[in-house]
Length: 517
Image (cartoon, rainbow, N blue to C red):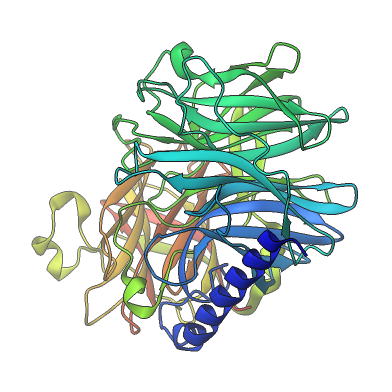
């Protein structure tokens, strides 16, 4: 065994021992998610290495196994046969070498010659300034069984950023794929003046020897301000188009858009593999909510493009840190392109989680303003609404169909606490044609309001909502809008109410299921 491999194994063993000492306490937390991927304890961020290998799906994630704060990054690891039920595996990567001693940053995975290969960014701090004093390289690790990984002895395989208007140190998060027997890799980057994000394209015949091709998007060619750094790029074919997913940092607010610290979206177009240029349209958000970052995709057994993202946001409050853990993944979602727009729908197999259910049809909703509405802002009034027996819970799925009727707005309040006044409100404004997710009264954690444009079809609003102990994920229309949020309500805040304002709305149908792993 090479000495560096021994160092790596020792680092992994220490990390596992740290997790083992904390995970039982963490498992008892009332905000602990029941059907979302999270680390056994401590910090988690970007999904990594999302892949299919030997009949199972593998998902890795950025992980600090010693603290609830971001720190030197490891790769946590789970696997699944169905993308619904996940099994925790040993930590896959630890920072143990000179080229990655301060973190095994984000990357991806691919099967090559029967082995599962990981490509990741090795990070080293060269001074006190984490934005300026760093060195980033690209490295490989491989596994014969999909569980135990060995770092490639020839690392790093990409030792430096290319010359040109490319920042020499901020280039990271490799995403690899195969096209016509050649391997390709894209990396997130920025210009030397740190004003514009961009994506770099590399090519290799063997995963080992890489040649820089071009800046495929962003940089000096960007005609609108799309942030100063593009993190976690992903490129794949979907239908007859190519899709570039990235997470721009530093975008300015624009009306209802880009209110999070950083964004995640995609651009539809076509990659010319000969020239290395990606001709594309405008950025489309993948999620209009609060907590969705660094999405990564894979192709499943059925040929569907599946995406998972980090369900949190940088520099936001994370109340679960006081309970020994921080961060989680979104549920898996299926991406399609329809009418030139990206569509996002929850993975159909999530229905395996459904347990006890109730069903209601054709219930009228009439305006009724709550007595305490005078204590809140006029545009965020609380409504008493209607309750239905069995429609409640803290780990619940809802399928809802509203007929707008004469109301000016209507919606649903979730995780309602009768005594605490807590609620997370999803409402539709018929005049502005906007869907609003309001977590101003959701409990602990950050508040805020997010809005998304959405046109109704024949006056009908369809919703599919996934509620977990400290999250809510909304899918509206026919895949047009997704909105995700971490929320931290009290243990008694499990009520659900339906409301209408200034008129009458018909609740055509509502199905409610209890969900559990």
